[in-house]
Each structure stands twice: as structure tokens, then as C-alpha cells.
Image (spheres, rainbow, N blue to C red):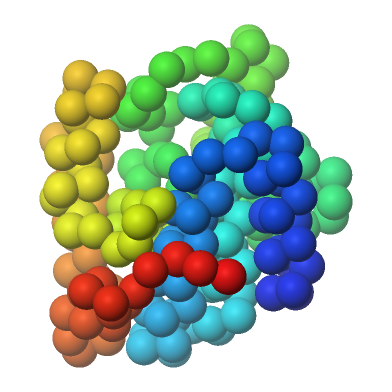
Length: 196
């Protein structure tokens, strides 16, 4: 289950009222990328848009790092949107390992256990992989070069595991092969700017 496009837009707007910041436009950019890539590779563009728009919805609860993963998962499960809850969890772990998380670990032991338990039982599908890719392409100002985005994260946090870096490039190559052209062309990298 996942909300309609209109419901998702309303959920994001409501969440931004609790915790304003660039994460909202980052989410809009991820949604744009997800919709465009989905249309190019035969996935459901509306579903992809909604999942991209709400992948960081846990940020509604404040400035948390790893905590936004468990917050988003729990919030979406409470609303009955299990497919959104899934990408709230999976988007930060392209190798399904908590060990490769980049950022501050600010979860309680219970939240950490929830993340580990859910990751251990997931079998990633094309939507999980799509949102992981789009998260790596999306900036608050628009679409960015994936390697520039990863380098920026590395500068901010002091680390970016090589395995995670390589997997993001492999995801890009995978979806480019499916689309038959450059992902940057598909997502209108040079012209798209978030505004809704």
C-alpha cells in the first residue's frame, strides 16, 4: 500500500511544517528522478514518484541522522503504507548492511534493532534500487552528478565506504542499461529544478 500522488504531496508539506529544511526539495528531486526513470524502464511512474517523495519522511520528526530511517518506517507503517515504509528503511542501505551507514548513529537500541531486523528480512526489488539511485542523484537544488553527491557526503561525514560508492555506480549503470540511455538525460539533469 502507498498513498496517491496528491496524498503524498500533502504528507510531505505537512512534514516540512514540523521540520523545515532542504530535505523537502531533495525529496521532490528524488521523486522527479524516480518518476522519469520508472517511465523509461517499465516501472509504475506514479508509485515511483510517491516512494521517492516520501523516502525521507522520517525527517518530519526533527534533525536526526540514522533515526530518520526508523522514524519514517514507523510513521508509514502506522498509516498503513507498508511499501513506503519499506523504502524509508531500504534507501540508506544499498548493501543491506547497517555497518555501511554514512552519518551519525543517533538511534536508540530499540530503533537500531528494528533497522537490523527489517534489513535482514528484505529482498530488494526494483523500487528499492530505484529509490537508492535517486537518493544519490537528488539535491535540494536539482539533479546532481552521482559522484559529486557521494564526494559531498564524504566531505561532510569524513567517510564513504567504497562498496557503497561502487554499488551506487552499478545501480546507475543498471538503470541506464534498462533505459537505453544516460540517466542524466532521463532525469533532465541540466534543466530540472524542484518546485511544486
